[in-house]
Image 1 (spheres, helix red, strand yellow):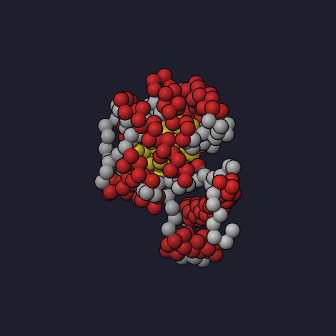
Image 2: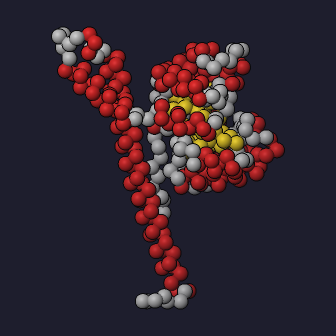
Image 3: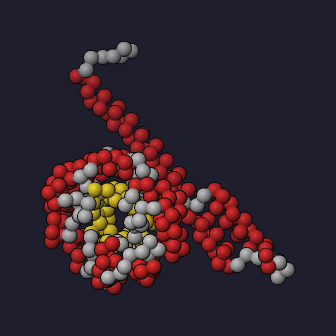
Length: 328
């Protein structure tokens, strides 16, 4: 029996938390972190000699993410390196998404799409159910992004990396990340034009004040999602992308006052169109998050019902082999 699956839609996936592929303790922390998506990394965060045991751990992690209603994903190596072996080892866990590092060409997307199709067929998974998330880590990847995003229907989200990108550009890193502002803007524009959800680069500075400033810039630019590499950053990322009750009340008041103002409204009470538009977008996002939460609860109830039916079926199937209990 196929279990109901209320997968969080791409536009509502807030924090994407990366964890090493072979670290069970970090996996456990990630599952409890509040992140909407957990990405086990087989590339930078896993040494080549640890990849075989890591793949087995990742299959278990993916099953846990699905049980908890989270997005479970894996960053594999490039196909021409260990990528095919990675897929062979992790597809039994039915990942929601596979991240491809150093994405630079449409041909890479086509090749990964074909490889995923083979593994989906081998594991009895629905064709096309595994998303591809290109990871942009170079100038070439950024300027070729439009062609890449059009190369596969599996691509619904795309991620901008930070340290490898900065190194490729020769940029001197600073806490304010002004050196990457143009890259972030272009990345977001390319994704939006292609109908793809842009995942902003992670804040690789640990300090809370630097993270807060980075999140302010990220949301100002328009990013609905963000990569995370420190588990303690998850709560702040989620909060920045989730309207609070007070923010919602203020937004509704703003829209109401905008509708009632006229030429006689004094300047200190005037609501400008950009302010009203910001409020409308906040209200819309709150509505989308609320609707998803309701659907997710319904899906959990449906899963519980399926579990109950499965349990009854198991008892019925074992009835002839078991002694009768009280009242039978």
